[in-house]
Length: 158
Image (cartoon, rainbow, N blue to C red; front, top):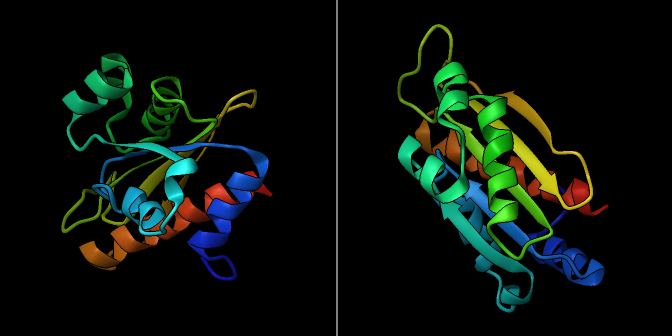
């Protein structure tokens, strides 16, 4: 997240009066931890959902069983439903989701390092994207995904 600190991101959200929620799978709460590492973040960060299993995605975020079956957990449609679910199940104005394959492993169709993101904001269309970080190793993929999600939040606040 070159050029922007988490503190600055939170200050920007505070300035606009926006609250943030997160929905994470492969990062296991790293994004929520990055946001809450900053003292005073509670006035901006509403809540984080760690939905590592498909059942958790369904139960906590309302992700459709059909979408999971048709697209798999690592897909933009699931990322979109995760972000929209976090937005609707929180007091946040802005929600970001992360779902991917941190590794080791993966498949020919869903390789290690593929991470899908979505950003949902009240009054705006949800946007999603897929980033191929490559087989960097589990820790580096998770860190890169966390940083990318912070950058998505930053862009949404500009």
